[in-house]
Image (cartoon, each protein chain N blue to C red):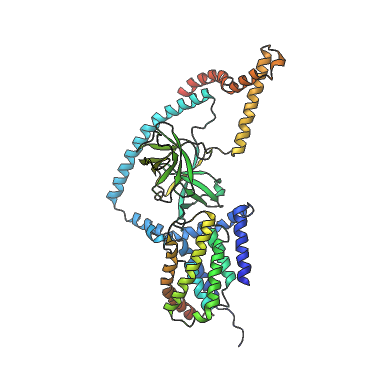
Length: 330
Length: 162
């Protein structure tokens, strides 16, 4: 009898949790216990690490220090170039009137646990809703994209990795811009590109970067390198296998990216508003240029309005960028 | 017989928390596929020998905790743990008479059934493991049962838990 009651209760809970949003806040609060649990479970490993680090020999530390210094030097050299390039990029983007951000805000977080189920690729990190983490937030490590946040708890969150069988990400071949979708295979070293035409220009060694078409992952971050391309005449599409660039099962520190705080709906309404404003400006300009008011809603005007967002703001901005230039150089 | 006040009841809870911890402890990748069902093992022991202290409701609550820890659907592990404990409870008169290795065999079947239900539920939510390996945890747990039972019995007798 009690089995029946509890079983029905469990099934009801499962259905509600899967289909409705009611339990999400409850779940997130219950998640408070998750972080300490994983923290305690990982304690022996961390203690061992700390102990070995303590007894690391002096020469090893010196060697590491030397290596890091050399690396820092290299990075600084690159950074010098990057500053100039960023400046240039911002200017060009302004000319194009593009709203895309060049630099995103990031938050460093640490891995505190790995999902005990070997068939899912999920990890737990030590930043949660108190740190501003949100659902669907992209997660990177030093080498590339790792995955996205799928569950936010107050002090921790769960991240679904790229290689989970339920995960896919739109990518682009860096060399020629060819678009594709990279799906996880359940193997931490393997991604598969779906529905790539047999004749597509893709080959071994190509770097795949995120295309940003999903409006979730920022564009241009490395995702994977193509490992093999198999053309099988019996298959409708080419089989393309790639290796993720991020160290999905080794990275301890990762970055949470805050690229755009707005939700997709807000973004859509914002862009619609901007378009409407540009259209109004165009109409006003048209009236000021002494065209007949009756002509405003004709087809010819609509075409002009479509071009407006590119034309109208570019002209006032050209002088402003040139006036910025000396300021930036000083 | 006068009604005895529960003595050292906290040990039961402590052991169950320990089981939850063992359930998420990091393991090498090749061992992860056969991670024993710690919570089920510990619960089975307490249910077998102290059925008046630990029952299906306890199992259900622990299962919910597991769901939160693993990030699975709320109720999934709760259902499975309740099922295991129901089977153990309905067999407990007989199981208590058996020697340890025979208990292991019965528990292997019970855990196997539970893992099968787990597989079905996972298939419903889309995370279906592609292999027969889902039976491995049941096997490992059954092999561990004599040791777990011996340790917990020692603890029980030492602390006089009723």
